[in-house]
Length: 95
Image (cartoon, one colour):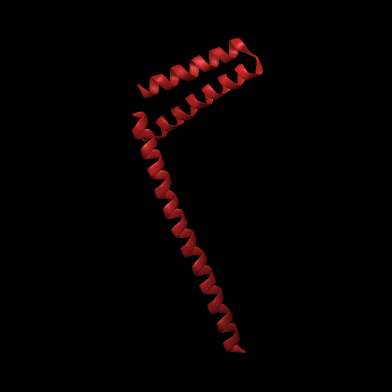
């Protein structure tokens, strides 16, 4: 009976080890992919890879998106204003 529980413990340990090693490999590759993506994105736009630059880029794209959706809903003045602010902000960051 003792060998049976030893075998169960060994199999459970092997399964846990397999899962942990698989997730470790996945997240290591995921980190490399995200790093490469952000380096390529910021390199092409001429931004630094700092958190503030990426947050500013997200804010500018959000303002541009809200402006375009406002234009599509029929809010001309608000849509033009938000689109102009978003484009100005993105142009200021990229230039």
